[in-house]
Length: 275
Ligand code: FPP
Ligand code: ZN
Image (cartoon, rainbow, N blue to C red; front, side, top):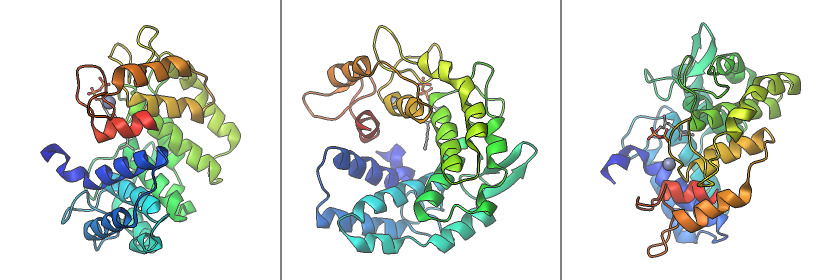
């Protein structure tokens, strides 16, 4: 778990969300644990770090916010850890940048800017009810420059298309559309070229999804590609996918899901296989 040192708020989210899907309500003490830990990861600037004493990061903030929303269903004081105004101020001051292609976000001050940051900022802002015009302006235009030659979306302009980043791009466009910052017509013209690319990610033999052409199937793409299909109404073979997950990715001794036979199960793949 040393490699997950900076992803501790994600671990809370992966576990809380998995339990939520399984219909197992958090206990009050679990919700209190999440609340206390997130409070310790909260920074002066407004976002959350991935661990105690870490710099604020867009992905750690999205994970902490999501975990707190789940904890808040059994312990309302979890919501008090969230400071909407400070979050918005931090995003506009430290993360939002203007590029020739439009507006993007950095994951942290002076950090890299990719569509993961865009999705994490938009999703958190939407959850917190602070998705303002100032935050959203120019973002759809930058996302439109992420399309690769094969129809999928890459993480940054001119990158290879990938299922993880394609999800971030499509979910961001849907949030912008839902919030009135992108018309249905513009949304449709931006998403249509990736429908065939999404469908081709389901492998006939295994039934699972791969994240990019010529790579192996992996359980987590059941979410990154599967949710993308849902966002743009693409129908995939759900029973073949279920068979891959339930029969080949479950660890029948320890429980949990793994990316593929031969690997060990982990919280990340368990969360996204269930999702
Ligand atoms: C390739 O790894 C993986 C990436 C390039 C990043 C994938 C991005 C995500 C999963 C999205 C993250 C989104 C959020 C909201 C944090 P690999 O080469 O090991 O895997 P592959 O062979 O399946 O491409
Ligand atoms: Zn995976």
